[in-house]
Image (cartoon, rainbow over all chains, first blue to last red; front, top):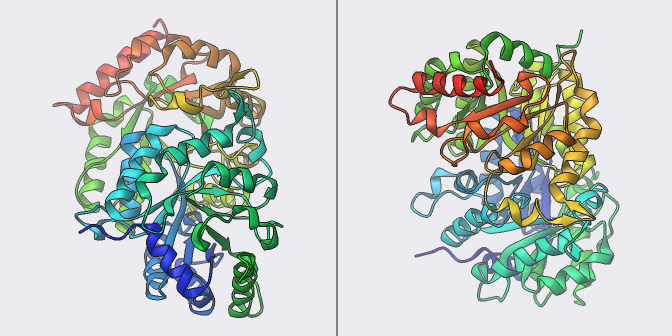
Length: 275
Length: 275
């Protein structure tokens, strides 16, 4: 039996916890052991207000193979806390290699223990549709989600992603790439686990992105340290509260009381839906 | 004292070994231990005909933290064989995180042991110039090289990288991004370690790419299993034989005699220069 689609697992969590908050894990500790400890502490404190954890793979890889051990421990800790895990590695490669990355992150249908066991991953689509395809195929098989980078939150995103290309900005081409494949990862909730990363730092784009990708879950980085405000995310919300997932790292990790900071963010976000 | 620039270290190796061949390491073995063994064997056999080794990070990550151990062992084995190491992870992220990836791959100037110790890395520029900048800065500090994905070798590269954008194909915008920054990683050889990945599968583009990036080292995947031929690479060659680096993985790894296969490829490539 196939596992439930990512979209449906997330939808149930969002409804149950009344939260669209994703705990960003960008650990800065000086050793792999301390990184694992830092993540576990944040999961313990802030996890109850969240539905997902998003480990930033770079912050673990900085510590070599011990860092990957810490990453595996962090995934297990997040799962223990009832969170889905979005592996934020922004992988992307030629088809043959993209399939290997998908296996590394999601495992395979036959042997889930072979991979990191992430529930979803961020994917870089620069190499084109054939390079995204192996992630979508693996997600279909394993019940995972895929967040394609469509318009990132950094200022430099304007350099390429906003370039007009064949009549529309490049990010709209990427949105079409996502929308065309979204039905393959759609669950009973109507949401699709073929989602998109869209920077919350450019709120003026959110409405258009939702128009182009009506069913996709949006991962919306940029709230907090990068300056975007939760109050501006309204146009990104689709037909289901789990249509947005908002990662926050530094604003939680650096708060005097991470649990209270996460709960305040959760409530702010949930109120956008009119509850 | 800063280490010698990557471009000059590579130029000396290419001249000394009369080779532009890069050993692609895409190990397929079923365990991390066997992966390390597979790579060591290929380095032992084919290394003498090559100047660089290019481990495909996905193939190691598939085995979790033990795979990263195998990766670190492989980097050490390649260095022992006198090869420079191009970490092929195609990383790319917002500036803050890109800097962490650069540290993971190159170490820092103060503490080289902190990172993987790669001599160069492939970098995905989708997120824009500010996301490439941390890799270039780290490379300046550590004497590393950076290969920016400009036009990849897969068929789907046409989907985005060939789109006309503001008057020129997207890959030409990326070539300009590389060329503008190339002087920062230029060595006494005149070559720049701010290089470009350009698929050998589209030989018609090579001349134009060389025109736009006269000093950059080109990493040219696609020869062998992907169907491109060494004989078509002539237009990619710049003013120095080290201006091209040709990764070959499957055609060497699956040959009955990998040493002879590598030597034959080396000689084919070297003859392009008219020697």
